[in-house]
Length: 601
Figure 1 (cartoon, rainbow, N blue to C red):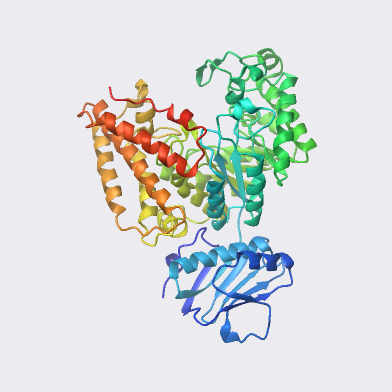
Figure 2 (figure 1 turned 180 degrees about the vertical axis):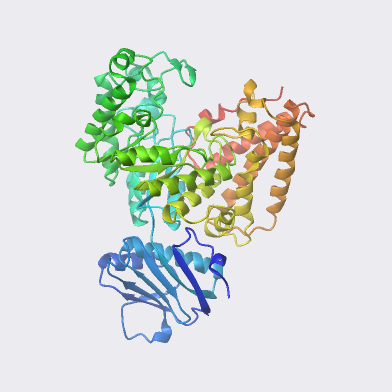
């Protein structure tokens, strides 16, 4: 008899008990519906895809019934929970809400995919730890997905029981009042959002509007029309170094609030969600430009909070609940208690040792609801940082749950041109979904098999294992690189002296050997997911870029010059365009491509 560990489910259920026997659906063609709920019946009609005919008749012979759907009282089963019992004679699914049935079906579909026609008997009792479990996808730096790609992403996230999606936006929404800002970006349109919002709701996902509203506004402020709104119109020195262009809005200029009000009035009507993420993170210019005097008189934290509260008023006047990034206010814990108790702070950090516990306690003790906001660790890496991502997400979930966080978001950023393909992020989405549903579930190598089976539909296990191992190539290097990886830095920051400090020739040689092993391991995979052909191109592209990084690194550390270096660079640039257009709009591609400055010297 198989064990519970042999059943690869994503997320791992709270309770799974494998029993003797198998369910074989042959000849049992009916699903009996035991509910009067119009919503649940509607869900069954639209979404039931397990090979059974629906019936509400009690007269169908039991030996022809293979699936039974039964509505239970909410007191017995939580809102998103379900009970799934597989017996030799039939599958019994019970839930109290349409969402619970949807997630129960998702679990059964994963079981069917793994075991085909001989389904082991088992009992699963399941419900989530976090009520809100989401993903934030960067659609502003510089990659804007097609609507088809977003639909496919929603399908993946829904299968993993994710119930929230945010598209991080700086300038890539089609604001009719501001065409010069997005005209070269192929923006997401109002039509796109209306369609995507409807599609998300059909999959029990809340599409939450997201528009950065303080820092990270350089795509706006570079235009003369908006430069007067900048904190530092000509740039300034910051904690990150000197910037010669404006980054953020000036918080003491009332025209900044008038500007944001106009954006919100265009953006928000496209969403049915009552949440709104205004971000307001990394305001590194604050107090160094036009707000210097105000910050000297009132304090940087107070100036930040006052501006945030003006944004809060805009948001609440429009019937929304404000979410915001907590990285600035956490520096001023004495001000946290002044926040309205209907905001949601987002406690974010992307390293495995980020202080989620300490920071979460500050929000908890001040009575401010908060999410934890870890990340996929895909950006600035090409292939991800697997162990860092799992450590980061696991710590966020465990500490957030203990401190009373009401949600977990997994961020997937696109810094420096968004060079990593979407499939590199699938492991991070899986980890975030797993930890958000069941904080006690292990985030370890077992995810490689789950990724293969439940995302790539590859029963060989090879594709998931390859992505898992590619994401750990960064660990070959002893040097710790925060929020990025050595291979990425070697290709994109090759002109910085510090990039090569602390590195050794032998590390790049080991990297080449590891890439050969991973590439060889892909032979004989059995990937059947809808985007399998695209994933093939993406993983090949990633390996090729990493291999160039290894060879170039060896040369910079005193080894031989790479063969056909210029040809390989040109090939990668051509591939980047092809891979980009498989999932994304062309707008933004030239900005991404401009980040590549490595050339044959």
